[in-house]
Length: 177
Image 1 (cartoon, rainbow, N blue to C red):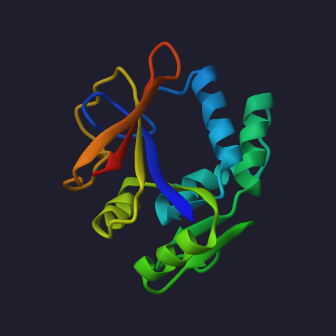
Image 2: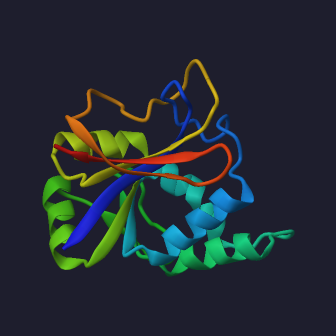
């Protein structure tokens, strides 16, 4: 059975704006390469999927870690939740119909970890009680506004683990109580 986790970089005041929370350090980026390489798949909303398709094509100037992340992204199955997209890229499948039924099916049929991409999708899956773990990559920055990690009230959580990833980032893992 698959484990669904929602994880993103977050500022001290709770926001996940990827354009404003600092670029990952080489050590944090390597962590994301290894995490992505080990995924059973990713579940994305339309907006974040659109941003992530950047990794579908090699870019000039990439170093070895960027090429490794792209390879991991490309090999990992992706399920895209969208009512507006008509097509998706390689190794991606559009999920149409009842989201709860589709995600429960994935959880039953897939072994390993499935990453949830995007706070809006995570909000819906939280409401449905389908997220098994929340991973906050806490950065020492205050943004003051943006998209919150928790788009709505969160369920009661307990700290399951924590790890210092680099000099500035702490990964906090929480599970529903």
